[in-house]
Length: 211
Image (cartoon, rainbow, N blue to C red):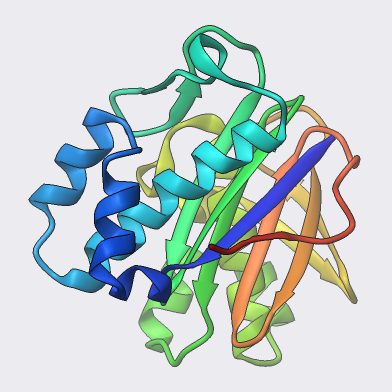
């Protein structure tokens, strides 16, 4: 089972709430937040940490089983547990995915983007499928999910992944991962939110975190 959690980080505009949850995230996350300058970036980073912590609790993981570490390229993983995790943030939302198989999550705000960027990160096959801006972001988020599973992130090269859009279904034509991959898209107003996993046992809806 793969579960997805979302938090609207505008809640952390409240300084008391921000400080309360800042004290609850890991020292590593605190240092990352402190290095950021824009307040919106600080709220997003805190939101990602809080979303993941709460997601692990709701997945039944506590203490040493929920101890988070990061690879050299920033991929989060659990030090003492085989449960798989992934985080993302965009706009004012932070999201986390927790699953029993390898998982990647990405959320992106749907907004205008230069044609040069679209051509750089999509294949010719994909470009022929893009009918509107949301189609592009569906491809973008799905590709980034795959690269989060590999642990490479954007440096892994979106152009090395080729996907097919068939109505509401996203499928892989080619990617660095040889196992079958499945995608689940969730409706979040003007955002694209996509989760990718190595099995198709996704929660039917997002779990919203509020305080």
